[in-house]
Structure formats: C-alpha cells, structure tokens
Image (tube, rainbow, N blue to C red; front, side, top):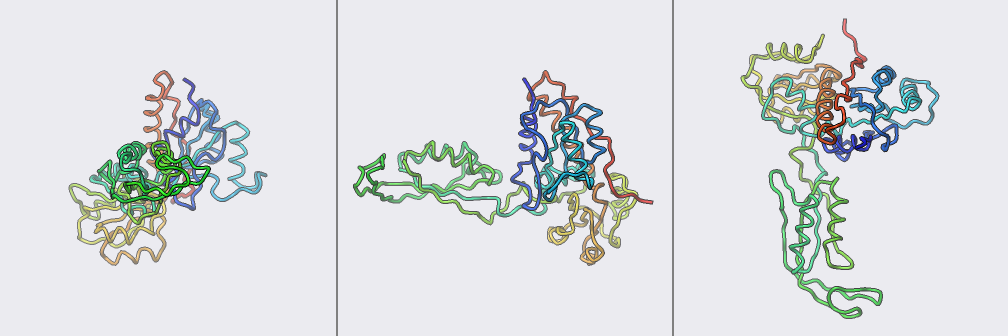
Length: 373
C-alpha cells in the first residue's frame, strides 16, 4: 500500500485535530501536495533552512514541525528573510511541511503532558480546559423514528460527555407543518395542515465532529426538511485545553525540584521566584510561553508552575504562594519531537506493516535560537 502525506496528516490529526488549535495559529499542511507518496518523515520543533538540508540528506520529503514556519501571511517569496528562504528551499526540493503547534498544545497527551512524563509527574489533568468547544444539537423527530435518529447521532460521535457515551435529553411534543405543492411529506398530505407526535432530541458534541453528525442526522431522519438547532455551550472539555497539572510523588523540597528541572530539561539557566520551605507536590506545567496561565496554576492550588517566557513583572504574581519557574521556551518543548516520532512510528507500523517505519527520523538539528554563557 502506498503511504501518502495525506495518510500521515490523518494520523497526526487523530492525536491533535486542527480544530483544537487557537484562532491566531497557522496549522496544517503549509507546503506541499497531500497526495504525494511519502519517502521519509523528519520530525522537528522548528523548520529552518538547516532542517530542510537535513531532510534532503536523509531523503525525507515530509517535515513534521511543531512550530509553523509560516505564521503570518507571505506576500512574496524573494528569499529576503529566513522564513522565505526556508519555504523556497523546501519547494525547490519537493519537501512538504506540516505544523500542528497549538493543536498539540491543547490535547491532554500533548506537549505539557510530555513535560510531566519526563519529570515523573502523575495523575495529570488539563490546567486550563478549553471553552466554546462543546456544541449542542437539538432536533425534532417523529416518535417512532427517534430511536434510529439517536443511534445515528451517537454513532457519529454525538452524546459523549467526559467518561459517558450515548448521552441525550428527550422530550415529547407535537410538531405541526403544512407542505406546499413541491413538498413530499412523509406524514400527512401536501397542502394539508398536519400534526405529529415528535421527540425533541438534544445531544452535545465536540465541534470538529459537527459535519459528520449533521450528515448522519440527514441520512437517518425520515423528514424531507430536518428542523434542528445548534448552540455553543459554556461547558469545558476535560481532555482539551492548555497546560496540565499533576502530582509529584514523593514530594520534594523546592531546591531539589529546581535541580530536577535543570537536569531534566538540560537547562544551562533557569529563572525562578524565591524559594520557601514549602514542599513541591502539585505541579502545573505548560510548554512554551505560559505566563497567561499563572493565575490558573494558583487557582488550582499548585505548589509550582513550570513554563517559559516569563517577563519581569510576571514573577511578582507568585506572591510567595507558588514557585514560578521559567525553564526556557525551547527547553520546555524539546521532548515534543520524541512524542511525535514514537507516535508516527507506531501509526505507520499499524497502517502498513510492510513499510519501513524506520523512515521516521528525529531531527538532529538544534533549532534553539537562545544561547547561554
């Protein structure tokens, strides 16, 4: 079986659907044709010219990058900056570039969870659950067809709430309608006022599943015109959102915890607030720039919050209630490459056992732009 870029994209988006990404982000296939046969995959944190050179050397025609090389729009390609030069080189050598960024940030098994795994932190939950992601569908179906409609909605992914499936609310009522001359009513006759016993079915679902759910609804519903309503709820999703919080067992002193961070993240320098005698047990983590989550970490009762890119005044928010630690942007996300290599290797092996899964490479190029002395 021929493995195409589209197959790799499909596998990646099982882990991190693009709908999980933040609105400001630029994720997905940035360069290339998804129907191209995959010769090799190079996984990197950033796509730079040097990474494209590495892909050429390793005969990889797909770069899977965490950060998008194209973030804001490109109006020209003249090679005047590192972004344009990287894109030009990739195009010249028929190398596709795919990026996931905040789509992977927002999954419970993503960037921040990998940080927790490296530190031995367990019982991980989302730090800042994503809002506006859960929608509710309400639809009216004839009483005798309600069961079939419900089953179709459930099969398409509707009605899942946390640890529960097949969830719905149902209320009985009377529907009325009059079909015009062009109508083809299942009940009653065209031009005649009709009343029908109907069930109002309400189900919640994740936003990316909407198209499939509506398709299943139309196929299962007997009416020529299906009346339904969709609203966005304020419910949060316990497995989708930024950052994680978990337990360090056994607890350790703040001094020992800082040493653990330096060793684990191979950081030449970490910045942190003043240490106290309070032990570290509950730890919040967020890969990349995470100052926006300091309040959430405090609200969750975290003893420490580990992230990156804290500004001077961000550290004042600790107020001796939490240990804030900036381990560096690259350092906090460095294990993301390993997560993706392991995931894609396994996926390719399951998809096509005869294909060499060894064609998934962990980039050896250090893309960290920050140096310490």
